Length: 126
Image 1 (tube, rainbow, N blue to C red):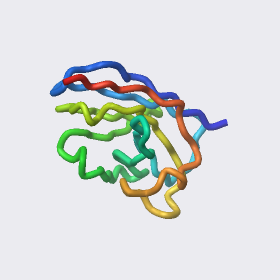
Image 2: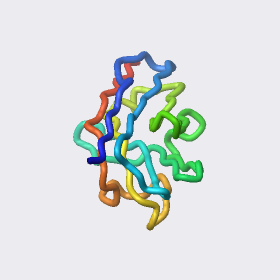
Image 3: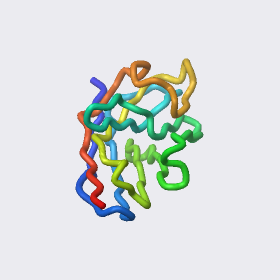
Image 4: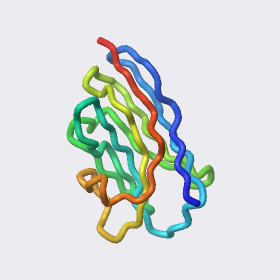
């Protein structure tokens, strides 16, 4: 059974940094798209960054230059390094995974991802 478990959330002041991790187990697809989404209160779930099985990445405009997505295949772990955090980055952050069939880009809708973690909260104070 595929399982994704996020960690690393917490409270941080504006301008600070945080690294999120997502431990992935039992996911054996050779070509895939994995990514990070976030959802703020009373808002829809939006894509933040994605990475495919070839290491190509795509970012939402709102986080370009501040966030970096990466993966450690040996550890089966997905990361999101978040720098220069802003109050508007406050949200529940989720990692997700699915196959590559329809491509891998930051605007790929959350409904196209099959596997999800439970989320980790990031709160940025001004």
